[in-house]
Length: 239
Ligand code: SF4
Ligand code: SF4
Ligand code: FES
Image 1 (cartoon, rainbow, N blue to C red):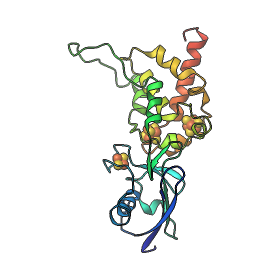
Image 2: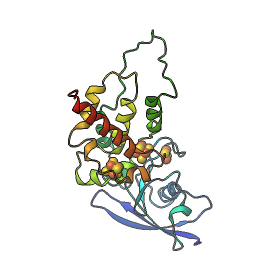
Image 3: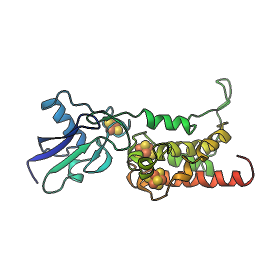
Image 4: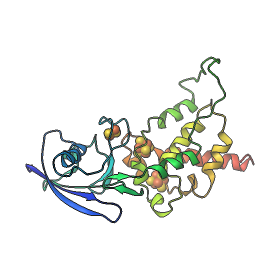
């Protein structure tokens, strides 16, 4: 193991370039620790984003040695070879604001386009809804609910790169959790929103999103569920 890491780090906007830094190697060091070291000791104006440092907020994702990852939970030892080289860049498929900070607004706008907001009818005066834990709908919603909005899947998706209007794995995964929420009342609008050309049918099902999701979610399965539901309702003339 080398004593220092040889780090190439993206500086500037989309037309920026990699700068090079030597960073002391530490035990149990994460990629986010490396970026923080560079900002605190070498480049005070380095822009990057993080909040929780424990894998909950979804704000720290970057491209690490060519692959999107959450950096606060990625240990250097997992991604660096014997040569100690580390390349850190902003997430792909998102505009770069500066350095490692990307503009996430397009990503979250797609959640809104996919009707990713819960809409119920109950008021504070109603009793709690009771949804059986073992029901198929509850199980399907539970399977996707732990999304932290990190955009690792979105950044890893070839279809997003090819056609920027594609809703992408995270927004579609969110839509599927709500399609399975029996309390929600905008199901027809949601299924129409995800049924178009830039929706679930654009997914090629090769599964980069599912392979890379740091929370172990399976957007590919969620999208398959949307495809089946949309097709079933379309055949019945209900969409
Ligand atoms: S399976 Fe679909 S959503 Fe996931 S990365 Fe591939 S095209 Fe994108
Ligand atoms: S589905 Fe996984 S990779 Fe995609 S935004 Fe949610 S947590 Fe991140
Ligand atoms: S800093 Fe919150 S998930 Fe990494």
